[in-house]
Image (cartoon, rainbow, N blue to C red; front, side, top):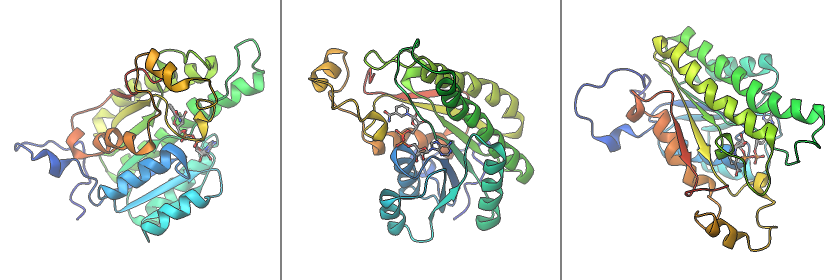
Length: 271
Ligand code: NAD
């Protein structure tokens, strides 16, 4: 049922944790969930009880999305919006609440990267990365928070940051990407502080290297598995489903007193 709407409400009896790490009855929005990590999180949310999941994405949903949505009839939807345009995100959230009656969790995940040496980036390329990864993340978090406040929901916001927010990827560094993701983690702390009084929790997950379109370049490297091993990590990329635990936990009532943190999911080093 829909008992689990207030994830920042106090829990006073010793909880059976497995009954808490669930999204039973919750409506979750995920930006950039038409494919890749976002779609993987969407599946994990649905497997773990979410009643409805909405992907807020710029692209037309493709084969990958339709394959998953067919498995969850009436539960997984795509809504078009551009995270760099705040109005379109607000409109998407209004539509979700109008259709489903509620919003309990928002995963701010849409992002792009571009690997170049710092000297080679054009101003436009730098601005585009910040527009999506940092300003867009701000607009999405704010649109969700406004909806939570308006409807009295103690909602959860989870950003997809990156291990690149801690340190550069050694093989394909990207100064604007890393800086935009570091901005996301910094913003997590400020938003968590400002919105604590509403019972809204704000956290992030930092993936390492995940098997999506974004990491097409990894298997193109000679001896890449050996290289990952050399840097002390698992000699493979993460599958998107392996990130699900961190997101589902942070969205769930098991994390009712957890805010302003980052969970790295990076196979030791992952970059
Ligand atoms: P992806 O390219 O497979 O998916 C990104 C999705 O975001 C796409 O569906 C795209 O249409 C959407 N999107 C892009 N710009 C948008 C915009 N302006 N408005 C709305 N939607 C937009 O990438 P992914 O690997 O799934 O990455 C998801 C997130 O994870 C990103 O924030 C990325 O920076 C982060 N990340 C990825 C990795 C990795 O190894 N793949 C590692 C660390 C962090």
